[in-house]
Image (cartoon, rainbow, N blue to C red; front, side, top):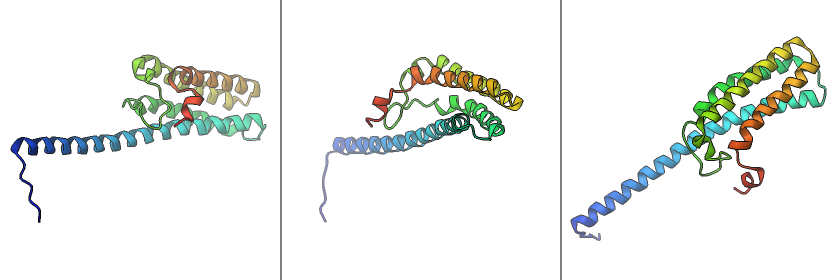
Length: 160
Protein backbone atom coordinates (compact mmCIF):
# COMPACT_ATOMS: atom_id res chain seq x y z
CA UNK A 1 0.00 0.00 0.00
CA UNK A 2 1.33 3.39 -1.02
CA UNK A 3 0.81 6.22 1.41
CA UNK A 4 1.08 9.77 0.23
CA UNK A 5 1.96 12.46 2.69
CA UNK A 6 0.69 15.77 1.45
CA UNK A 7 1.01 19.10 3.21
CA UNK A 8 -2.29 20.40 4.60
CA UNK A 9 -2.76 23.05 1.92
CA UNK A 10 -2.48 20.44 -0.85
CA UNK A 11 -5.14 18.33 0.80
CA UNK A 12 -7.43 21.38 0.92
CA UNK A 13 -6.75 22.16 -2.75
CA UNK A 14 -7.53 18.56 -3.76
CA UNK A 15 -10.75 18.63 -1.75
CA UNK A 16 -11.84 21.90 -3.37
CA UNK A 17 -11.09 20.55 -6.85
CA UNK A 18 -12.97 17.32 -6.10
CA UNK A 19 -15.97 19.25 -4.80
CA UNK A 20 -15.96 21.52 -7.85
CA UNK A 21 -15.96 18.48 -10.16
CA UNK A 22 -18.89 16.92 -8.30
CA UNK A 23 -20.89 20.19 -8.35
CA UNK A 24 -20.11 20.67 -12.05
CA UNK A 25 -21.24 17.13 -12.85
CA UNK A 26 -24.50 17.56 -10.90
CA UNK A 27 -25.12 20.91 -12.64
CA UNK A 28 -24.59 19.32 -16.07
CA UNK A 29 -27.08 16.53 -15.24
CA UNK A 30 -29.56 19.10 -13.93
CA UNK A 31 -29.20 21.22 -17.08
CA UNK A 32 -29.68 18.14 -19.28
CA UNK A 33 -32.96 17.30 -17.52
CA UNK A 34 -34.28 20.85 -17.91
CA UNK A 35 -33.19 20.94 -21.54
CA UNK A 36 -34.87 17.61 -22.26
CA UNK A 37 -38.13 18.89 -20.75
CA UNK A 38 -37.94 22.11 -22.77
CA UNK A 39 -37.31 20.20 -25.98
CA UNK A 40 -40.23 17.84 -25.34
CA UNK A 41 -42.55 20.82 -24.84
CA UNK A 42 -41.43 22.32 -28.14
CA UNK A 43 -41.65 18.92 -29.90
CA UNK A 44 -45.27 18.71 -28.74
CA UNK A 45 -45.92 22.10 -30.35
CA UNK A 46 -44.24 20.93 -33.55
CA UNK A 47 -46.23 17.69 -33.55
CA UNK A 48 -49.56 19.46 -33.27
CA UNK A 49 -48.60 22.05 -35.89
CA UNK A 50 -47.39 19.27 -38.19
CA UNK A 51 -50.64 17.36 -37.81
CA UNK A 52 -52.71 20.44 -38.55
CA UNK A 53 -50.52 21.15 -41.59
CA UNK A 54 -50.89 17.59 -42.88
CA UNK A 55 -54.67 17.74 -42.50
CA UNK A 56 -54.89 21.04 -44.33
CA UNK A 57 -52.33 20.32 -47.05
CA UNK A 58 -53.72 16.89 -47.89
CA UNK A 59 -57.37 17.84 -47.41
CA UNK A 60 -57.83 15.00 -44.96
CA UNK A 61 -61.30 14.50 -43.48
CA UNK A 62 -60.07 15.32 -39.97
CA UNK A 63 -60.98 18.96 -39.66
CA UNK A 64 -62.76 18.17 -36.38
CA UNK A 65 -59.45 17.00 -34.91
CA UNK A 66 -57.96 20.41 -35.64
CA UNK A 67 -60.00 21.56 -32.64
CA UNK A 68 -58.16 19.09 -30.37
CA UNK A 69 -54.76 20.01 -31.84
CA UNK A 70 -55.47 23.72 -31.43
CA UNK A 71 -56.66 23.26 -27.85
CA UNK A 72 -53.55 21.22 -27.07
CA UNK A 73 -51.39 23.98 -28.54
CA UNK A 74 -53.20 26.51 -26.41
CA UNK A 75 -52.57 24.44 -23.26
CA UNK A 76 -48.94 23.79 -24.20
CA UNK A 77 -48.37 27.50 -24.70
CA UNK A 78 -49.04 27.98 -20.98
CA UNK A 79 -45.99 25.88 -20.01
CA UNK A 80 -43.49 27.40 -22.44
CA UNK A 81 -42.50 30.16 -20.04
CA UNK A 82 -41.68 27.69 -17.27
CA UNK A 83 -39.85 25.39 -19.68
CA UNK A 84 -37.46 28.23 -20.56
CA UNK A 85 -36.97 29.83 -17.12
CA UNK A 86 -33.66 28.06 -16.61
CA UNK A 87 -31.12 29.66 -18.92
CA UNK A 88 -29.38 26.89 -20.86
CA UNK A 89 -27.62 27.95 -24.03
CA UNK A 90 -24.88 25.33 -24.21
CA UNK A 91 -25.20 21.83 -25.62
CA UNK A 92 -27.79 20.59 -28.04
CA UNK A 93 -30.18 23.50 -27.91
CA UNK A 94 -31.70 25.69 -30.59
CA UNK A 95 -32.29 28.50 -28.10
CA UNK A 96 -30.54 31.80 -28.54
CA UNK A 97 -29.36 33.73 -25.47
CA UNK A 98 -31.69 36.49 -26.70
CA UNK A 99 -34.55 34.66 -24.95
CA UNK A 100 -33.22 35.62 -21.53
CA UNK A 101 -31.99 39.03 -22.68
CA UNK A 102 -35.48 39.97 -23.88
CA UNK A 103 -37.54 37.76 -21.58
CA UNK A 104 -40.72 39.87 -21.69
CA UNK A 105 -40.81 39.74 -25.50
CA UNK A 106 -40.29 35.96 -25.38
CA UNK A 107 -43.11 35.47 -22.88
CA UNK A 108 -45.40 37.73 -24.94
CA UNK A 109 -44.66 35.62 -28.03
CA UNK A 110 -45.61 32.43 -26.18
CA UNK A 111 -48.84 34.06 -25.01
CA UNK A 112 -49.57 35.21 -28.57
CA UNK A 113 -49.24 31.61 -29.75
CA UNK A 114 -51.77 30.60 -27.09
CA UNK A 115 -54.21 33.29 -28.21
CA UNK A 116 -53.89 32.35 -31.88
CA UNK A 117 -54.31 28.63 -31.17
CA UNK A 118 -57.47 29.43 -29.17
CA UNK A 119 -58.80 31.35 -32.16
CA UNK A 120 -57.96 28.35 -34.36
CA UNK A 121 -59.94 26.04 -32.07
CA UNK A 122 -62.92 28.38 -32.41
CA UNK A 123 -62.55 28.56 -36.21
CA UNK A 124 -62.22 24.77 -36.44
CA UNK A 125 -65.40 24.29 -34.42
CA UNK A 126 -67.24 26.39 -36.98
CA UNK A 127 -66.13 24.07 -39.79
CA UNK A 128 -65.48 27.06 -42.07
CA UNK A 129 -62.42 25.96 -44.05
CA UNK A 130 -61.58 29.49 -45.18
CA UNK A 131 -61.61 30.71 -41.58
CA UNK A 132 -59.57 27.67 -40.47
CA UNK A 133 -57.00 28.29 -43.20
CA UNK A 134 -56.68 31.97 -42.33
CA UNK A 135 -56.25 31.17 -38.65
CA UNK A 136 -53.68 28.44 -39.34
CA UNK A 137 -51.72 31.11 -41.20
CA UNK A 138 -52.06 33.53 -38.26
CA UNK A 139 -50.94 30.82 -35.83
CA UNK A 140 -47.93 30.03 -38.03
CA UNK A 141 -47.04 33.71 -38.10
CA UNK A 142 -47.11 33.81 -34.29
CA UNK A 143 -44.74 30.82 -34.18
CA UNK A 144 -42.39 32.62 -36.58
CA UNK A 145 -42.60 35.69 -34.35
CA UNK A 146 -40.81 33.67 -31.71
CA UNK A 147 -38.60 31.48 -33.88
CA UNK A 148 -37.00 34.32 -35.81
CA UNK A 149 -35.66 36.28 -32.84
CA UNK A 150 -35.18 33.43 -30.37
CA UNK A 151 -34.22 30.25 -32.25
CA UNK A 152 -30.92 29.60 -33.95
CA UNK A 153 -31.01 29.53 -37.77
CA UNK A 154 -31.16 26.09 -39.40
CA UNK A 155 -27.53 26.19 -40.48
CA UNK A 156 -26.46 26.66 -36.84
CA UNK A 157 -28.90 24.06 -35.50
CA UNK A 158 -27.58 21.27 -37.71
CA UNK A 159 -23.89 21.92 -36.90
CA UNK A 160 -24.18 20.39 -33.42
